[in-house]
Length: 235
Image 1 (tube, one colour):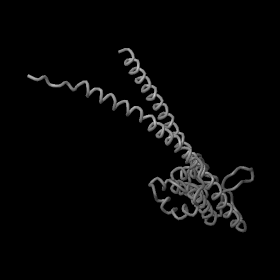
Image 2 (image 1 turned 45 degrees about the vertical axis):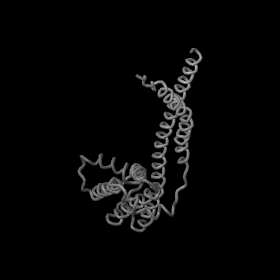
Image 3 (image 1 turned 90 degrees about the vertical axis):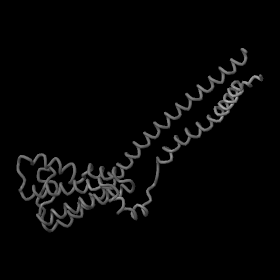
């Protein structure tokens, strides 16, 4: 009876040759992936805004996320608190908390409100800050023309609510709008830069990890190849 041909050794040699070919091709792929991962953060570091496109997309930017309503609501809450203080309708027990909120989130420069708006916008953050700054200025102007009380520097040099003469109310209102627009634009733009900075740091960390993993794989691959060569020489 004829003996069946043993093909296990031939199959093992074919698998070994296929593995070697794969190992020789893999380093180039690893290098390409590593270079692409490292290049992505560099490509996004410095980008000039497309003002025309940002203006066209501004309505969509302002409604793109539900959280985008938070900064306007913060300004609205600041306006209500300031109005209640101006007309003397706020209890003394909560005045300190109300003033703290107003200074941080409403009156110029209201940087934290603009920062949140710029951080949330997926693009055109500077325009979002501009809109929020103008809204803040408009609310302060509304307060001024309805109550005669505006935000300014008092007799003691301390900022707060002051009675504004009628003949200078228009200039005060323009000042509110200008200050809000200036601070809003720059604060929101900085928020967008900071958000992108954090994203770049995360991407660069991933690129460094991918590069380190590629080096480790290459080292293990070289070691396996060296072990095979040593095994062949000792046969």
